[in-house]
Amino acid sequence: MSDTGTGTIRFLLNGEPRAVSGVAATTTLLQYLRESEHLTGTKEGCAEGDCGACTVLVSEADASGGLKRRALNSCIQFLPAMNGRAVETVEKLGAHRGAAGAASLRDAMVDMHASQCGFCTPGFVVQLFAAWDAGKLSDRQSVKDQISGNLCRCTGYGPIVEAGEALAQVPRADVLGEDLALARQLSQIQNGAVFRYEADGPAGRQLWFAPENVDDLADLYAAHPDATLVAGATDVGLWVTKQHRDLPILIDLSKVQDLQMIEERLNVVYFGAAVTHAEAFATLADIHRDLGETMRRFAGAQTRNAGTMGGNIANGSPIGDLPPCLIALASRVYLRKADDIRAIDLEDFFLDYGRQDRAPGEFVVAIETPRLDANQRFFAHKISKRFDSDISAVMAAFRLTFDGDLVTEARLAFGGMAGTPKRAEAAEAALLGRPFDEGAVRAAQVALADDFQPLSDMRASSAYRLKTAQNLVERFRLELGDGAPARLSAFETGPRTRGVA
Image 1 (cartoon, rainbow, N blue to C red):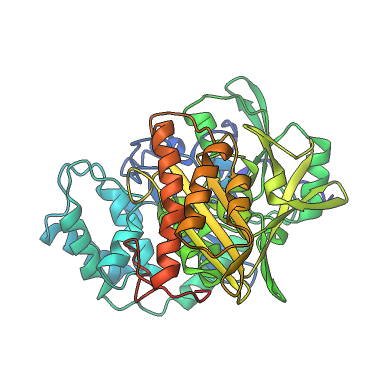
Image 2 (cartoon, helix red, strand yellow):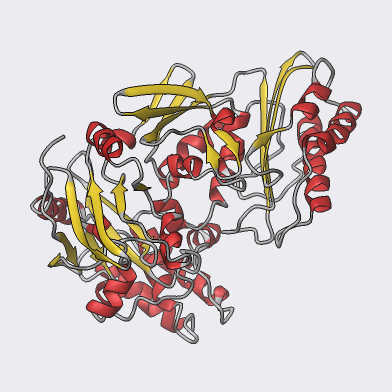
């Protein structure tokens, strides 16, 4: 492992250099902005990455020497993770890059009376600007998609969406020169080594490591197998802000370039564990549009910019949206401990609630996902109380393989139905060797009661979950049978046929 770098957090804040030491490693970026810098335009609403009031822009140099810029929830980002990056708050938004867009957005928010109490306004402004700057605003639906992670408690969404539509019409300037200049500036504050930060925390000394390659990560985790791995902090951040956990050693994965690849090999796609949901979106949607629709409803844009595919798997949540989809597609997960790498079927990774097949010091390296064959049909659908940015009550993903009209393989995977993401083996057996017709669906629906005895909680009752799971099998049959859409979706542009897409 290469020598560790400085113990000072160095980053740019609104274009000005900062060198911070002596603060706890689990200090959030929001705490620092408000309490140390007195930049109070950035608000704390939920402190869990849901409301978007704390949104900031974070930029970093990418592997090609260019600039990667994204909106993040500062309430769950830890300050040491900003080392070598640039942070921009609402106070300096668009001061240089995109100044015309920032001015146009400001005017539109005023002219359309899009700000009421004003508490949520900074977050909306930063997120809309980030989406415009990235070329993601085009029409009304795109505006809604981009602000799905922002809440307005004054119910002012209509004027805010209209302001976003107005911004979408503003031409984006060529900012390549500014991007390269900032990337060069950031390169001057990179450590070129494993970044190590140490300071007193709430309950004792805290250590923060940020390796830049997978070999250093493997060495660090082998030496500190009790360390907490932090990728996007969309889960770990809540351990601190909501559960007040003591995290003495943390290892940041966000700069490990080896874990950020997406590679195509024959009919298989490999996703590095640190690929964010935003980065994976296009490839997943290309595998099947239901995957794209699932990811469109996956949290909000800021969370998708931070959360990773490996993190969504490694935390073992029984209500994660992505694992059932990947299990239905027969995905495999690659794990590494020191120099040893092993691969297992993803469905075997989840052992029990809160328990995965991962040894101390072992971490997720990549996820291998097959593409669909011509004789395979896929379906994925999420049931939640809110359409956008909500936790699933039931998540279903199915893949059927046909020989003519007969089902030769069935993979029915569910989230929210058990203590882990799980296949419905009895229901699968009920479908094999027969046409996927009403009789087969009824048999599978009956068998689902043997597969699952779901819990009742605040999101849904046991009876509701079971009935919903049964109905989703019927929905799949209806969509395959006559091509008629059985749902509302931004991706629905015509009849669904029995083709792969």
